[in-house]
Image (cartoon, rainbow, N blue to C red; front, side):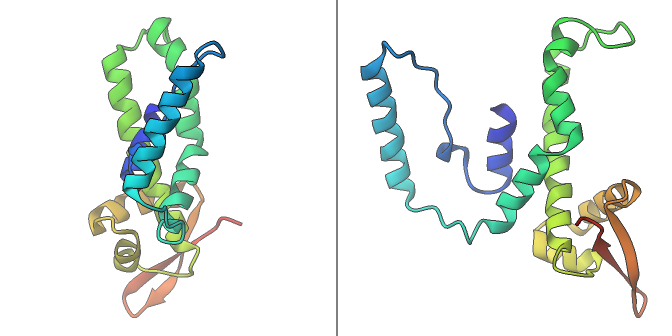
Length: 167
């Protein structure tokens, strides 16, 4: 849920729209109170415009499906409580920081890949459509290109244009 909260905040949706609470079947009143509380928060926030968040939602889903994030989330207990293959135990604070950085990078990469579904775009055009800084797009575009997810389509004058290789 920490990763989902971070992604929802990165996307601009806001973590207040998603809550996870554990309630047993014997705690009916507690469940009713939690539903009432969440309903009041939702009412105050107003309706959720799916169309407005179409790009961020797609990038959020892409980030959650990234092998890097899935591996990190799946290995947390092993890395923090036990040890990795090199017999090294990872400090929980360091792990959380690594996961936070990885989550942001994977969201940004997914955002770039979603924007590129529109067709060939330059770094500056990707930046404009994604809201990411030009430098960030340039760095991450290089990473997704090395991963075989993006390719150079050609040039418009001296400006390189990139395309997504995703099906």
